[in-house]
Length: 320
Image 1: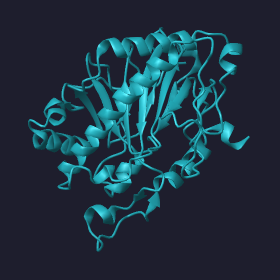
Image 2: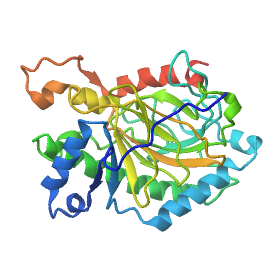
Image 3: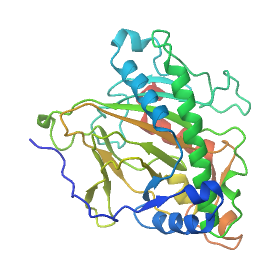
């Protein structure tokens, strides 16, 4: 038995982009062009100059470990809801129909809307916070807002890189469906074999993913030749990847790349993951970007309808 294998990458295989000139407004076009170029390759980008304070990241990570180190009975008090908020237990997800269930477990939350559903979408609802981990909510929400600001900044950069007005992708983002996850990967024994993953090969469902890795590593990305590459953690960076909806919005110009996690480190691993998505009524239609005469490869769909379909396929609890 062995772990699934991946190749070590050379410097520059996954581009590194400093977004501080975009955030400050000092030189947004240069950053926009770098993001534009990187998104047409692997669709994965290391981001530095993101502005999220290290103490905030550390506090979020520490509170997340406190949660995952709790007992199953404790975690069951915030078991995943139909609105996709709370604890998703190990084995609760698989990314392909013929795959083994993922080893990971997650805790998921979103904008705190108090349970209101202004548009009636099924992925809106109350966050669930563990009473036995009282500091978790404050750290989680603080990180969510900072990471969401980074995502919005990046979406402005992508719009500029495509020659559009900077708020093109943010025109319907008053009540976004963005969500945040703490994702915990236990030590993965080698004897589980090369078809077992922390999270199996998949592309991300939504528009954009903003990932804060720890120092452990395990993320692997598939290149256009079908070869798997390590995407190691780099200090003081986030890693950003194009999701299926952004690829669809750009008619495939931006690449939504398959990726997976193999935790062969002998240690536990934790990631902080923001999935950015606009309001559910947002129409994902490449003709809005390229013009009404453009012949798009896929028909228009709303963000909300697409996510509902993909969630039903990926998460067992939605079919109970």
